[in-house]
Image 1: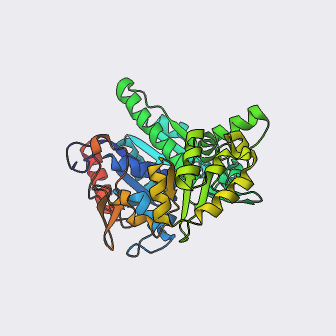
Image 2 (image 1 turned 45 degrees about the horizontal axis):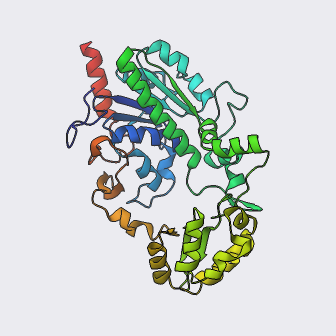
Image 3 (image 1 turned 180 degrees about the vertical axis):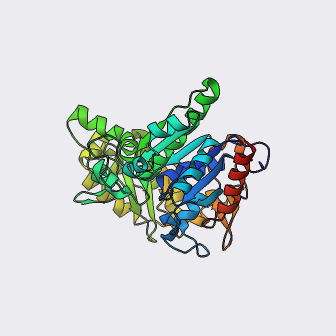
Length: 392
């Protein structure tokens, strides 16, 4: 199948065709990254509304903000997979594809004959990547597994928020983790197939992906017998480390890493040399033990200085700090004003700016690819398939 033209030189995955039987976040995040690298991604959608992420909101010229994030640069083909003829068309697509990525429920894939074993038998050269909530064949294989539910099951919520008030992470961290592992797994499988001719399957569950991201606190708990607790903006093993408010109401997060920085914070930033000598705070261990008293002392002193004054002093003292940026302020962040951070993306309702993906080899990414309207490519892709079938 003919890939899109590659802007700014050949793209790393130009010539690779990916079929995405996907919905929501995890699989679309993986396949959008493949599209950014130049792969042709053909997104198979249900006839009754397509990917339900299309309906999360309508704030981007009538399109969903989530759908914009996850589906730039794909082609949309509507197939009713309950219809044997449509399933036949899907297999024609898979005959000509390099990769299939799917995140339908394992039971649904089994009913459609799209489980990993069946796909590999019918399409031996196809890299099959399946994303599920829990591992297929495991004790919770058919349990519903939305992002927040996985955050709860993996213990993420036990570390997030404040004591007595657990919270979920504010972005879809379980879906993003699974999509990231699926993306890297597919890249490795493409490399392996190109080197050996063997198409290895990739299986990722949201639970396993997020548990990997929880490995540090998990190992700490296993080997120390003590589980970390949620601490808001603070750090369980370092003090001072957290948010303080300047006189004009701006919240600043500071991070002191060693005793030299602690002394500079007290003397050069807060005009409080006596605080550096306070026996309660003379070591990081002591400061962690006396965190409540420490935070109260620092809060009072930060509240005496304006943001402009205290940040200038923090910079001069080489103390790490950050503003507590709101999402309203994030678009105007100086890092997002750098040249090349945004690119233009056509949508059915008009062109919008989207973030250029990080980590693109040589800085090359697929430019100008559109967000697809539902089913926009059904006729052209199916005509292409059947024409190719007639020639074979």
